[in-house]
Length: 605
Image (cartoon, rainbow, N blue to C red):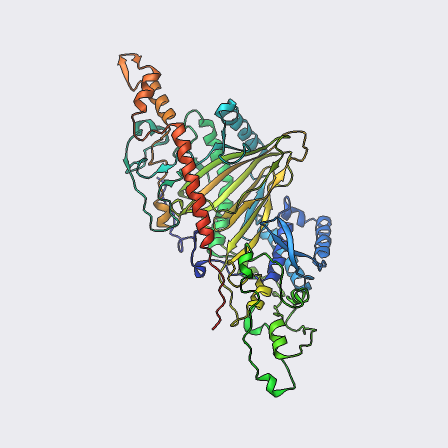
């Protein structure tokens, strides 16, 4: 029998819900490096980018496009909340940065072709064979989509645009009501024998980020040493018999996600190192004055941006600045150490208030050793995986999807460490992008130098310690995996041809942390008998659970009446009412998490 953990990890993998800035796993990246990241993102988001980069003609074309991009002095940062580029121009891209990016892309095309748009995100185009994708298309249509309109489960508050086919928020584990077995069910087919078995459990809320009421239910996915997958317990809301053909297909799709998830977790253990690592003590040239008395002048800087950070959604966004010569200042950021600021300062106060950080160049050669990492093996383990299938449908009468909110998946008691998305069908929509951002540690800084931090990192005093990471574009057949430390947000899209319907369809796999006690404590469907009253009624009616006499079964109406008395059985109406409570709880928790996001508070003493 496969062990739960085939090997002991070096340490527990990082989970979201960090309320202490020092606990954030990522270091902040300078605005100069963020610009390098956008260049990388532009290439690595392209369809089959690594293969195409190796083709001389395509590579030359892409390089020419990047050179034009680098020469655009009015290039500005991306603001995810408005989906626009706003704020101060970042200026020309120094040649040292451009050459480093070229070398990085060239190395990754050969050795890490699955890296996606942003660092830490991994992608495979055509991850699943065309034949297997077509099997999935047909099975989902036959078993889940081809139902009467009255049976379609439109996600609450989605304006009948998001169709839930399989969603973990329906029939979740409900603390104090759902029964949990002491030991896993012996096999996938034994679920009938354990209906209404087990005992209820209560929430263990030792964190404000843990739900007091609900837990999404993962299934047991057994991964052998070769990466082959067998689903060992039922997927919540996917009937183990009526929908049985889908189980094998979803297992095959997850097999294709395993290598990407292993890379995501490996990168969590060893995050991408900084390309540029400035020392704030070396940011500025000393002020030179012929007046000996002026050299001794000290000044308490009045921080004009004391409250500006509260107006900005995250550290990667730039707004209107009050500083003198802001455009010139920003264009100067990124100058190599040898470069001399052209401005002549009139006084020490003038220098102190308007000096510009001198950010060093990246290394002359790409840091291969620092960027090599070991994937976190998921082979030989029984993983806990939460599965979701959902479609977004647009019509000529309702042609625009407004986009989603920034969020992570689940709460702490689900211990989701990574997500894999498979875009199995897309038709007649404009580009759909998935954006990412993450929390960062506070940067090193000189006392009271809020202006320097703003110019170097795009972080504001009293502003959130959050930086934008990048995006990927949804493409039919594309599989994407990313850490749950990354908040993500679906950008708006609309019908390409407004006269006909369009859609975007996904399978999502949420991986429960396989490295920690928190993950081990998450109850899976191997220990939670089905709660769906309809499943229980059908099982008891067809199995002759209550015969009147030999060969004569109770009428279905009587079976339904008996099931209604079973405490653990849940009707669809009850499940939908509980789903609304679950959504309310998580909306509140998300707002609380946003409120508790660590902020950069400049030390003034």
